[in-house]
Amino acid sequence: MTIDDIGFDPDELRDRYRRERDKRLRTDGANQYLDMSGDLAHFAEDDPYVAPGFTRDPITDECDVAIIGGGFSGILAGARLLEQGITDFRIVEAGGDFGGTWYWNRYPGAQCDTDAYCYLPLLEELGYMPKEKYAYVDEIFDYSRRVGEHFRLYDKTIFQTRVRRVWWDDDLQRWRVATNRGDDLRPRFVIMAMGTTTRPKLPGIPGIEEFQGHSFHTSRWDYDYTGGDTNGGMTGLADKRVAVIGTGATAIQVVPRVAEYAQHLYVFQRTPSTVGLRRNAPTDEKWFRSLQPGWQKERRDNFAAWSDGKRPEQDLVDDSWTDIFRAISSPKGADRPTTREERDRVVELSDFAKMEELRRRIDDTVEDRATAEALKPWYRVMCKRPTFNDEYLPAFNRPNVTLVDVGAAHGVERITPHGVVANGVEYEVDLIVYASGFQITSDFRLRLGVEIDGRDGLSLYDAWGKGQQTLHGFMTRGFPNWCYIGVSQNAFSLNMTSMFDEQAKHIAYIIGETVRRNASTVEPSQEAQDAWVDVIRGLQTTGSSFLADCTPGYYNNEGDRTESQFLGAYTPGLLRFTRLMEEWRSTGRMEGLELSLDE
Ligand code: NDP
View (tube, rainbow, N blue to C red):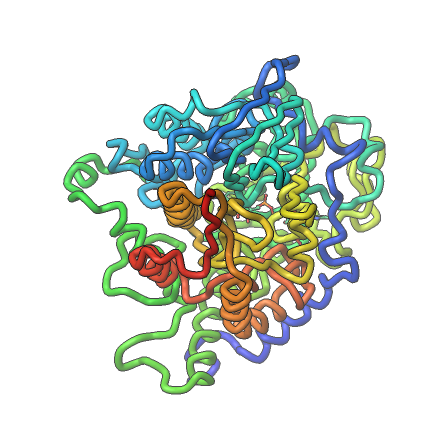
């Protein structure tokens, strides 16, 4: 194949990708972000969606299980516990309702990038038809409330309550859970279900505290200031100059909506995102009603098979995600490469071609040549979380929108009392919107923001000091009856709710069995835990070299080559992992777990 055949020069692209990565690498890596404590705590702890001044009396009581978090992972854990006959549990939720990430992230245009027929869990059980292929936040938030009502979880939940500390009380043989409301909960089991985008982060730009205008993080949108709601109507911005800092999956959705209303919008971009086609459409009711029982599992499994690189015969979801998976997975059948080198070469070329297509889309949409050039991403497609939107790129054709590219300068330089300094220029603004993301792959203490001490006062963060130590990603030795749902040493899935639900089922089974066997505690044996950690470490080599060549971001721990979210996952994928766990449960042996029996 010649360069003329494929339309690009692979050597040139490789070189360009390397240069774009190198110019963004920083010595402070993940430490460039601020922990939102002290003066900045309000950015993370304020809840703009509830009336101020809520108080209640502290609660002291015992229950079988405390589920920490009332997002989809928490409510799925509740639903699966009920299936196991465990009814005495409490959900503790920081927000004023269920919804989790969809409770907090009500910014304008917020939408799930995963097909709603896959993403919204339990659709068949609830008999619910999503309105569109990609659901907006209002619908998802309402749906999570509907799931809460269906399983009667409202009665079991305490809202507007932040867990501060969780510790094992050896005398009581129970966990103790302390909250910001002075509660002292004493459950036998704890399920951590805090989600993956729990704690917002701010970039460590000097001067943030000095800004005299208005500012907030995207996950705490202040509609009192902007006017309107998630669907638009932000008339409060008509005379406002607005800065959006960041161009990740959130900003891509925010920018076109703010552009519609702001007097002027400055978009501060450090690394461009890929912006694939959205192609949203209302649900075809006839098609939906024709689906046969079991359809949702089939669709979810099909999506998982594509994302695991399996290339099944059918593509039930058929969207820009599966298009990417097709581009970056090894061909099957007669075209199947015979050696690993050949496979890597074929996949790399196809990845280059996909990225060329995405860059052409920018040229075809954005009128100003310099802006179009600046918006082009130069890295392999899964280096950063891909985004999908049909309004973002056209927003840059509006006269009231300016792209400020700060990639070469390592980001925005400074915040002044009146605006944002980038590339040596001060942009005066009235509002700064930080679309700067979350503690997704950082140190666990930052991700969770809860102190967790196991037996003999051992902190979880010390136990995991040299990397997570778990059996199957769910439980850790020294932390009896403590279970973790989230991105862990198990299979990662882009369809988060599938992943959470499989985890919830497994954890509910373990708790159910422990109770049925009259055992007081359950925890992994040291041998089983070590063996699982070895399995996980053994799986990491390929992902590690791929991510090392990427521009920095949370996928590769901001360019720190030693750590990443996916370094630690069960890489054969969700379907293989689910099968493994089903087999594990089917033996009934609780292999690798130690149960201590009640006297
Ligand atoms: P990200 O972490 O993806 O993006 C943060 C942005 O802030 C990046 O563009 C980053 O640039 C930029 N930034 C950070 N520091 C600076 C600085 N000093 N100067 C200028 N820019 C800076 O956060 P998001 O909130 O966009 O997305 C987080 C995750 O949330 C997504 O990856 C996705 O998993 C999830 N999400 C899911 C959605 C869904 O559909 N289900 C929708 C929206 C979000 P750089 O890239 O250079 O670091």
